[in-house]
Length: 531
Image (cartoon, rainbow, N blue to C red; front, side):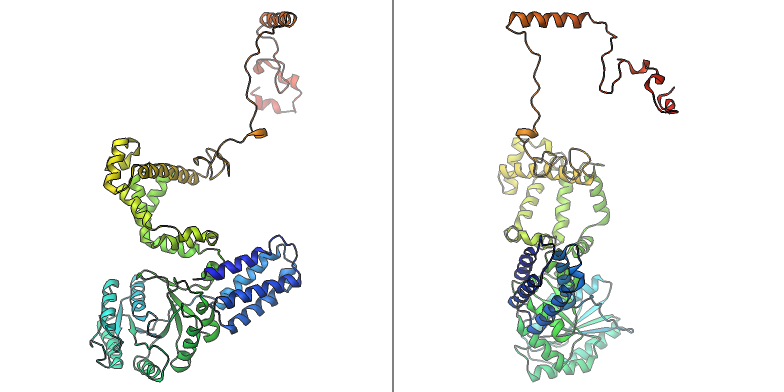
């Protein structure tokens, strides 16, 4: 979503690199480019003004003029101001002292409230709570049925005493849902309310009546992050008419410019608590302003990636695999298959790779990445026998042909998989051992790397030592040939224990026969020679 804004900001900072000192003109140009980038991203004008004025004020202060690297200091200021405009510190949900905690969802129709109710219920269940979903949207066709389906997928019960489709009283459904939760000891109630195509008095009154009936601990305003400036207008109307305590951004994985996420906090003063980043029930995460700012500035979001990996990977299996990679065991294709199956639990590979720092510079490659390639590789490995997975070296030509037919691939693709597997195993083992063998740390043993970054084939020219020449043959000149023969005869007749000399100036062929007193060593050094 923030791809355009991220690219514009990266280009702005790139122009500052290499400057040891920033003039007022440099700062004004940078602030102007940031302002234009924010406006193009559909950020609300009040938010843009507050942001750029804060950046300008800090950029002209002593913290930049006295910095060793002013360009990096500007990036630091923009990062901190982005965190501030996104809400500062992330806030936890406010749970009631006496359960059940009531969470009311509000927003326009089409914002994704019903699906988000299931995502929130699943997230609460994984956090150790016992949630209950209440179907109070009785006007939108099949809204009750949709919530029941989503609740079933999330493994969360749904309270739906009315069929909906215009039948029933949503206020009574909400009130009875809270009573049912108290009776059955559910500790969190998520109330899904009706939305409209636009802000009107009837919507506001119904939402206010449900609020008064259940007295919610949290009112979360669900806003579609793709609708731009209208999201801010709607949020302000809800804040004035009903009031809400937090915001949930849905469809944050879309291709819109993302101005809503950067504007709501400034305009309404309410924090963003959660973000929906996809269609699956697992595509739901806490909103951390510092991590989102880091993503926008192409610094990655490694913390979120680690948190997701901790949920998907079994700790024991991960430790065993790490030991195998380090060399305590043989990392086989069976281990590789298990690793891939766990990686699939993390979700989209594009999304995971996008959380790594600097991946914004490889956005085109990421967009062209085919998620189905993982499935194809998995099919190839599953078409192998257990013995072949344990020892890929036994896979000969006929076996490769059989595996290719069984997985719907070609022999060349099987060859490529086996080659890449060996390269990946070598690379991971080298990195696990710190690169102490085979060349540069972290680089040794990499196929085609030659032990040096950017290596590969041996360099030509001065970097390569001249080839050693063998013994010279006898000269064709009679006089030179006679001289060579005399020198050879003298060397052959010399005694075997004659001083041969050495690079350290020792005149004896046998250093053990040397008298230490003749070496003029420092006093007391003889003990190191065993004398």
